Image (cartoon, rainbow, N blue to C red; front, side):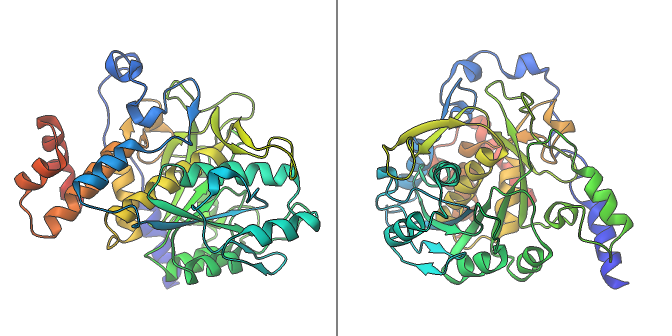
Length: 387
């Protein structure tokens, strides 16, 4: 009975309305400098979003705070396969683990070769995993932890994969997967320091119906809906996908959404990332893919860099930073809980400001060190009240 009460209170209070409503029309929001600036929202409004380019905004914050290139956060990526030898991954991966086949190798090379011989990391699976891993780590400030959590022949071991990731130091866990499990939810409850980032899915459906089903059956069946979605947690962030116009991706199948279940949106259509072009033994390069699977590691990578800036943060604080700094649009205010698209620059600036002021620096001096404009100072001073 006690568990039911906690769930009901959480559903009523969490993500009911966007944090910041916009009074501008969509056309007013995306005109002028913003729409024509290829770096606005880290390039998420460009026709093709190249997720492999360095995150220059993070690099600037890194220098202003005196962080070194050796400081990074581990981001685990749970997938069905990876092309580990892609040159884009050189020096950017640690603790690769094939949970399905029990292969462990810190370099990842042996795991890739053996799995390839066993035909469990087939070219199709490798492509999806290589792509999402590339998105998560390419911006810098993070190290990828590729984990084979499920295979193309139907074997799945998500719980053991997550436990492995946490035991080896991951602070962010990327899950571009269909459904979570009750076990994953229990792990999330036990580890408030870990941020779980999950794809909303590509069925063009509202996930809020799952929330209603969970409320009606708080102690009942887990089958039929995704517990990760149906029972929201502060350290679990579900991600929708947007296109180059900044709108919810709706072509073909389309992004799932839900103002009470999906936290944020991020670019997921026409995303360029690493890919094994001709399969396991073929040439390597890049390819465009579309889906919430692509939007999710974009958020996971930004979250990892937030942890790199300020490792003392709890996962709930990181998710809140991502939400309150998101760029608001009228459409997304009725589609995702935050009402906006992830804005990496604003997120990095706010966490840097939060770190400096918590370390004892005055707001004025912290703003000077970060190089904030007058408008930015005014905005972030208002946002600090959430922390």
